[in-house]
Length: 389
Figure (cartoon, rainbow, N blue to C red):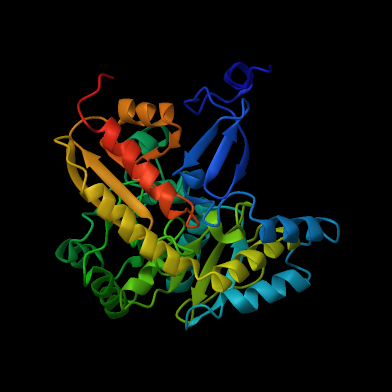
């Protein structure tokens, strides 16, 4: 038997803390390791596999397009890209243009550049606990000092204010602010949803003071929170929306939806070699078709309510709070989560941390109700009492 853990530990970059498990196959909300052991996936590739693993429609679209045309730069038109642009830009009023790239951090980088181009200003207001990516611009908007400190100095002009604090936001946004960038639900920062009125107040401030509102929907988009986009839970109209993760059913892809207040975008100011490739666009079209046909956001709302109810019914002295929206759930406990994550993995349940004390659940939105019950049961077991670690 090949020792995948040894090979990746020896030849990998060293940037990832490797688990001694090698996944080789997936279907829906289930993964299998090299020994044929089945695992319940409550991670979905960090929120990528919203339609589950190996969705047949997405796989068929990728296969068919790969045999036709894989790459075509955006200086030339393409049938798959044109169709996706038309569909994607019809999802939300006033977001009638889109820029394609390959990841969430690229989408954030593009949105930040577009905001500075559009306004002629340089200031960016982000939030404490916010996460927007790891390249220099996106990292400058990210709060966690562990990610930032090794690479300072970062891009100037960024400041951070407390999340869900309208007064602090009002104080920070001024006539030098190009944009405010927010998540509808802070994911990496501990699964904190926006409070009622917060995003609306942010939009009003941006309109009054000439800034743009960027909403980072990289993790929250494509049905994750029970709506197609998280901001649709509130009465808000963003100027720029960053998408990635599940947009192409698991294939790497990112996008920025662009509103009417965004100006000054002209040829040559930004670009992406692989952005909007026919292959990614075909996968994204298949993903949208499945989202509509199976009403995936509604499934996430219903299943998320069941998951939250099950978790809140767990009688454990360790649980401080269970919070979330749709199938984006955080369980904050009174100890560090590392040993509990390991205990879940031993029970063949794969989850994520969100900081030191929060277990994050991002299962595929096609997860079955019995699989939700299994996840709740496993968490009840591991959270029954303190673990060493």
